[in-house]
Image 1 (cartoon, rainbow, N blue to C red):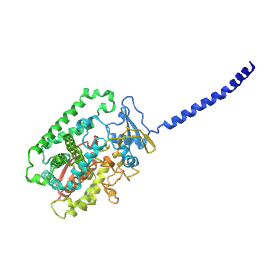
Image 2 (image 1 turned 60 degrees about the vertical axis):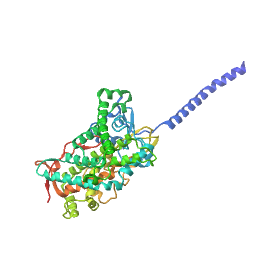
Image 3 (image 1 turned 120 degrees about the horizontal axis):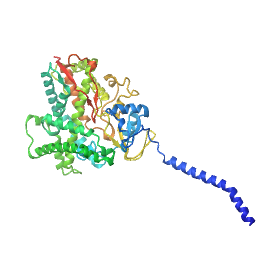
Image 4 (image 1 turned 120 degrees about the vertical axis):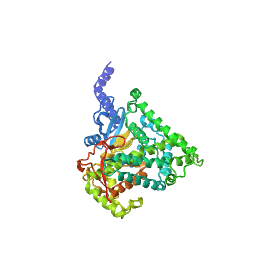
Length: 505
């Protein structure tokens, strides 16, 4: 028994050491495993059950997110319902998303409202990244909005702006709603370019406004899937389907008109050249293409031209005019430039625009302070990626706060002041990759309509300033002009811009 007793004693004496070694081994393995799998996620504000951080967006998400970024940093992880959402508020982070890791953040999240309203996202704006999106973007960029094509619509732009100037001239001495003037202008241009002729302006404008409003409506199912039935009960889905049906009926009528009837040979049609519907129908019939342009894709592209074109142009014109009214020094300097270039002619032409650096600077400065889309259309990460030192999981929604970046004091001196001169001595332009200035986004998902919009904005602004002195109704000082924003997918003035115009000559 002695050998057994000795062995037993030895084992008992060794047991504490073996136990300690075993515990240490388990701890080391756990630490190594945890360190390997632990993610360095961006800082997050406290969230509520079910809704996450939705309550922190408020009525002015661009402003509220800017304030939160000052506390939590330029890269924050929000939770919108059950959807992890990266909020980006710095040029450096925006550059990583839209340039360094552009391919990792190149797709769009699937959202209920765009799917219902925009033909299942068969256009360019909300279509997920892939071969179909590449084909549609190629059609948009090379067939509809190429430099040659945009230039071909010069007479349309000039004739509609000339018509607007005549309307303003007839309204001298009265109070004018400039927002309505700009809406009519852009609607007429878009209709002629996209559809070949002008339509009933009020009906078109109401359809576009309602559709854009519905795109901003919160649909529960996209962010809290198990509550998707709420959208049906409160009627959100039904309203979206109704407006989508109305727009579809309108577009079907337009397409049938193009198919069943030769284009009229009147002067307006000859000026307009081929419209978007003509181009797309020809493309549809072209058997040499390596892809098929289906009817639904054709309609989706036309619809996006209305949504992205009409509202962005008119709101940008309204903000630019508002800033000029509030800053008489800038207004006077711009009037001097356009007057010198015009040399007594009746109007400013598009050929004059390249000789007007201050006009271009005024527009760029207005777009810095009032980007058409204050929060760029959401992206979604297609794979796990390291961003600014943080681990971002695949499937994370990404929102870039272009409004906050445009007012970042680390980039822009006196960032909240309207100072066009800041754009006179730098190389920032609409084609450059400048991530501190994002009026049209950047990277693969940048806005393809930039080339179309800028000539309209510059030509309209130049001619108004050349022909008229613009002021506020009597009793209102320029510096007291209300500049409050009405937030939406596109940012408008909260109140109408009411002015009085006086002929300069």
